[in-house]
Length: 310
Image (cartoon, rainbow, N blue to C red):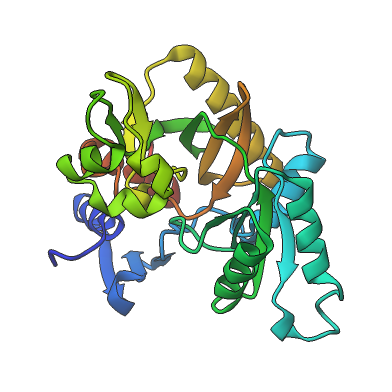
């Protein structure tokens, strides 16, 4: 087994080895062909192939997901779609920049700009001024055909629920990198002392130079993405878990998806859906919980190959 293979590929290899299934990994691990007898099944990217084409498309489109959830009465974070002007005037509405500026004006705390499709929190910007907006839009449009703008909200907690056929397999929170004040050193110095220098560009100078009171926790980033340094921690609070699972099931049912991860956020004490991912990626989760990750992919593959799960 190649040492650099993704956890997703490794998990499929293990399952296939234990179930007499031939596996052929192509395209650097992004295309996986599995065969048992005359039957062949494919996995692509992080998509294990359980979801319908329309559910997959909806989940991968942040704007479409938000629209469907709103139509279904599922609380969610709004995502307004803007198409890349390079698509031409017959596709893109005139006045798109003015509409973006209007959204910014309507949200005094700022807005979040990000690609309409994609995961891992790449090219995600919190902007509070027209100049920042223009820079963010330019960067996203350089590599994407569409972007979404949502109001910036103070996320108190972000929970990910991984579902298979309305059954929660994994529920964990994303714990942002942080430091604990000692009443003496600045947030900047504490971050460096704890080996979190890479997070220092997430805060402004005033926040970095502040001295936090002893025992007070200061987060180093507004983003909850695992790729941005957040750590996965299993949710043990029964009340929180139940609320997030119910909302995730409502969201998955609304778009008709079978196997997905649903990100749920608490804002002003209320839970809302942030987004749904059709490709279930658990690379970061596999470090602290490797057996749980394998069991989750095993359950999905049991569904693919018609195995009894007892």
